[in-house]
Length: 180
Image 1 (tube, rainbow, N blue to C red):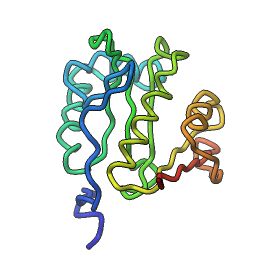
Image 2: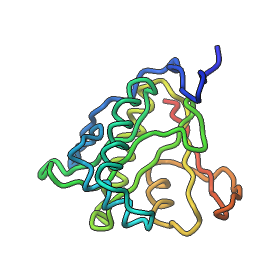
Image 3: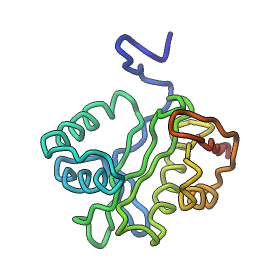
Image 4: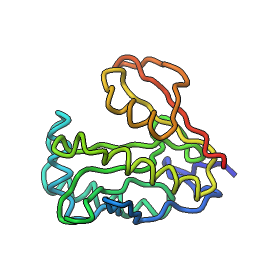
């Protein structure tokens, strides 16, 4: 059986699903909610992409929520446990340039949340959750201009694998084994 079905939809892989909520000492990671639309728009604006309208942001969030159960992997929003109303960004697993069997870890935080260790803390709990799904390896791809992401990935056990190039320039591929 192919891992893909018609129209690019992904068939359920033989892995346990990533939870819809995870907690760390300081953070709550949970599935996107419509209340996250303003934070999502702010994040998109900070990265310099065209700002989605509120309706577009809500549609993106609705789509992410609807597709998460079928994929078994998804992005989770980050919030501080001591202030759950404060949207910090997201972290989770995506297919990206990888596969459903060996997905990519992805994270992005608002600039105001940088420098607090939140990305490392969130990424580590996602690595642990990925291991619990039965996966044996994760990937990450990072542009060379992003040293903070390399530091986060190094702290959680990723190592450089190779460099490829696309229309946007070099892409550094990193990997991490999830073997016990």
